[in-house]
Image (cartoon, rainbow, N blue to C red; front, side):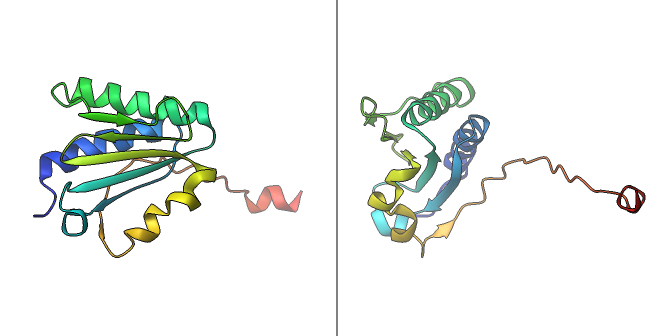
Length: 136
């Protein structure tokens, strides 16, 4: 069964929260056909253990406040800081330290699954030097 729209909307809230805390490589896959236990797996990287925990906490807070009090039904890895797995039932969020990404290899595992457009907003800041400035 493909991911449902309310699940996708909740994952977008989670992705926006992770993005706000400067998580890296935020990606979500529709893994329903592969796993059969959840519809969506969202992966977010972090540059250190403290950021892993901060991203996970921000995701939990936003999902609770913006998605009708959603709370994870299970939470793993909070004490180590290398990774945190938040299982919301219809989707799972995995926040991990960038250096641990090779160990998990989640993106390689699900590379054939459909990617979900998270619609994150990134304001474009383009610095252009005018030809007049270059002439000086």
